[in-house]
Image 1 (cartoon, rainbow, N blue to C red):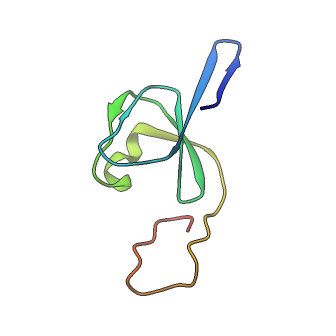
Image 2: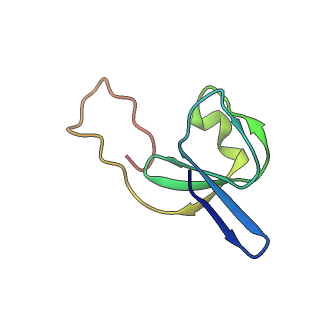
Length: 78
Protein backbone atom coordinates (compact mmCIF):
# COMPACT_ATOMS: atom_id res chain seq x y z
CA UNK A 1 0.00 0.00 0.00
CA UNK A 2 1.51 3.33 -1.04
CA UNK A 3 1.58 6.26 1.34
CA UNK A 4 2.56 9.78 0.29
CA UNK A 5 3.46 12.46 2.84
CA UNK A 6 3.56 16.01 1.55
CA UNK A 7 3.96 18.28 4.53
CA UNK A 8 0.79 17.77 6.55
CA UNK A 9 -1.08 16.02 3.72
CA UNK A 10 -1.15 12.23 3.78
CA UNK A 11 -2.79 10.04 1.15
CA UNK A 12 -3.34 6.28 1.50
CA UNK A 13 -4.03 4.37 -1.74
CA UNK A 14 -6.86 1.84 -1.27
CA UNK A 15 -7.24 0.63 -4.86
CA UNK A 16 -10.63 0.31 -6.51
CA UNK A 17 -13.65 1.61 -4.54
CA UNK A 18 -15.74 -1.18 -3.04
CA UNK A 19 -19.14 -1.12 -1.30
CA UNK A 20 -19.57 -1.59 2.47
CA UNK A 21 -15.91 -0.75 3.16
CA UNK A 22 -14.62 1.51 5.95
CA UNK A 23 -12.78 4.51 4.47
CA UNK A 24 -10.92 7.20 6.40
CA UNK A 25 -10.26 10.83 5.52
CA UNK A 26 -7.40 11.06 2.97
CA UNK A 27 -7.89 7.51 1.62
CA UNK A 28 -7.61 7.47 -2.18
CA UNK A 29 -9.56 5.14 -4.47
CA UNK A 30 -10.24 4.68 -8.16
CA UNK A 31 -13.71 4.50 -9.68
CA UNK A 32 -14.54 4.54 -13.35
CA UNK A 33 -10.94 5.40 -14.26
CA UNK A 34 -10.91 8.49 -12.01
CA UNK A 35 -9.08 8.95 -8.69
CA UNK A 36 -10.89 10.27 -5.61
CA UNK A 37 -9.82 11.37 -2.11
CA UNK A 38 -12.06 10.63 0.88
CA UNK A 39 -13.15 13.88 2.53
CA UNK A 40 -15.22 12.31 5.34
CA UNK A 41 -14.52 9.03 7.11
CA UNK A 42 -17.41 6.60 6.54
CA UNK A 43 -18.51 3.10 5.59
CA UNK A 44 -19.22 3.12 1.87
CA UNK A 45 -22.72 2.71 0.49
CA UNK A 46 -23.82 -0.19 -1.69
CA UNK A 47 -23.33 1.87 -4.88
CA UNK A 48 -20.90 4.59 -5.96
CA UNK A 49 -23.82 6.96 -6.63
CA UNK A 50 -24.90 6.65 -2.99
CA UNK A 51 -21.36 7.30 -1.74
CA UNK A 52 -20.08 10.03 -4.12
CA UNK A 53 -20.69 12.92 -1.69
CA UNK A 54 -17.92 11.56 0.57
CA UNK A 55 -15.26 11.92 -2.14
CA UNK A 56 -13.43 14.68 -4.02
CA UNK A 57 -12.07 13.96 -7.49
CA UNK A 58 -8.27 14.16 -7.68
CA UNK A 59 -7.51 13.20 -11.29
CA UNK A 60 -9.24 12.39 -14.54
CA UNK A 61 -8.97 9.28 -16.63
CA UNK A 62 -10.85 6.45 -18.27
CA UNK A 63 -11.25 2.75 -17.60
CA UNK A 64 -11.40 0.24 -20.44
CA UNK A 65 -14.25 -2.23 -19.86
CA UNK A 66 -13.89 -4.15 -23.11
CA UNK A 67 -16.40 -4.36 -25.92
CA UNK A 68 -19.71 -2.69 -25.07
CA UNK A 69 -22.56 -5.01 -24.06
CA UNK A 70 -26.14 -4.19 -23.13
CA UNK A 71 -25.91 -6.25 -19.92
CA UNK A 72 -22.86 -4.46 -18.42
CA UNK A 73 -23.48 -1.84 -15.73
CA UNK A 74 -21.28 1.12 -16.75
CA UNK A 75 -20.37 4.20 -14.73
CA UNK A 76 -19.12 7.61 -15.83
CA UNK A 77 -15.54 7.25 -17.10
CA UNK A 78 -15.83 3.69 -18.40
